[in-house]
Length: 120
Image 1: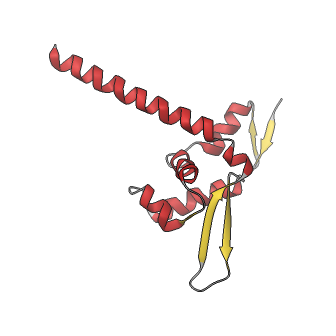
Image 2 (image 1 turned 120 degrees about the horizontal axis):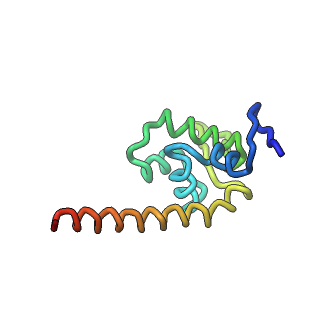
């Protein structure tokens, strides 16, 4: 069964999922919002020191468009905008935690491998 979403065809739900949460910064942004929520743009930037603001805004817009996060704009001057995970976005918690755990394991594997190679 073909899944149509955003003028694209996906042949499996896995392809669809990777399209929505794939990318360099999306998992990291979701992780930030799992740690503390809601967050303002500058607070997310503090968590993700190596991302530039333009890229962060672009990734946030894509996540909002896919309904993974919600964006609340308060009618004040200066503008106040907060981001938080939506109901469907919160369901990503075990996925993100598993990816982070795997990253920790992989780092340990790389360190052991590097140590083993240095001893040889």
